[in-house]
Image (tube, rainbow, N blue to C red; front, top):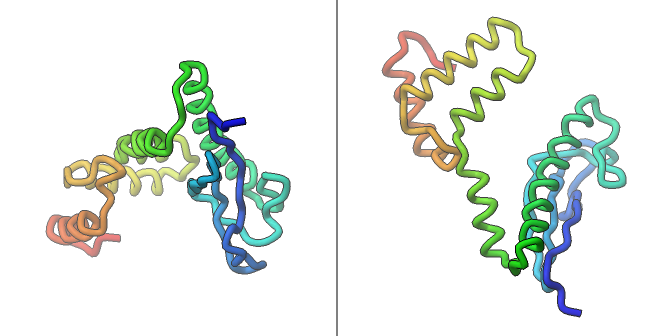
Length: 167
């Protein structure tokens, strides 16, 4: 039987480097026609904090599980939409899908995160000042704009426009 659509699964510590003190990343593996692609979930765990495809034994395990499940769900829904439209899967289409997700606005993401997190008023004010400075800088708008060059330019911009040491 020819595999028409990929299979998904979580993979933790695929390089076997995790220990009690050294963390390793949780990936989503996309397997299609004997080819694999790994998507970094951004979740890093130490040995013993991953069991049966779930984060365990951490205070933030609920948040981390939501994060990885959300990414898994988005990928799975995209694959299901391919099936419903009788489109064939390809890693090129998948890369385009992932890149489209990553081209969202960094500024909007930052604004949403500031508003949804429970922060003290002073911390929220500091975050909003940072957001305003990024908006004034105008060279960092999308996630793809977060390059080393732009970050160095932003640091230079802050040093020139502020009367004190930027943090």
